[in-house]
Length: 89
Image 1 (cartoon, helix red, strand yellow):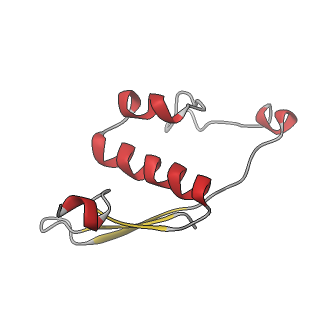
Image 2 (image 1 turned 90 degrees about the vertical axis):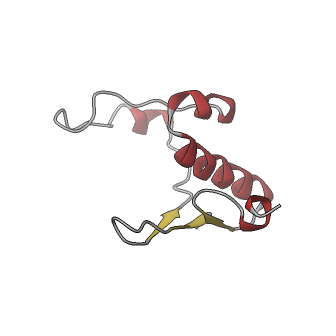
Image 3 (image 1 turned 180 degrees about the vertical axis):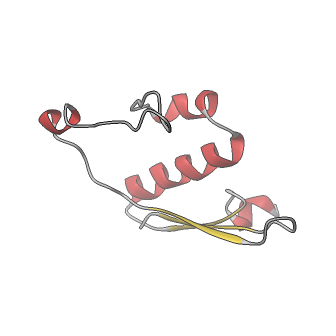
């Protein structure tokens, strides 16, 4: 597990979201990926510097925190996609 993100929402109720390191796919495994046409039209592997332009800010923060946690070999706790100490600073 890389990230736990607490996302309070008065309208929908609080959520706790988890991001896990799923490992790396071998090149031959990539050819086996089958998308459900009614749910997904494509997939892509992105560099961290491409995340902000491809998704909403809250999700981008969560993904980038997971990337950082993986690189540093730690787990991160977030609130609304932000580190609590950074959000209150």
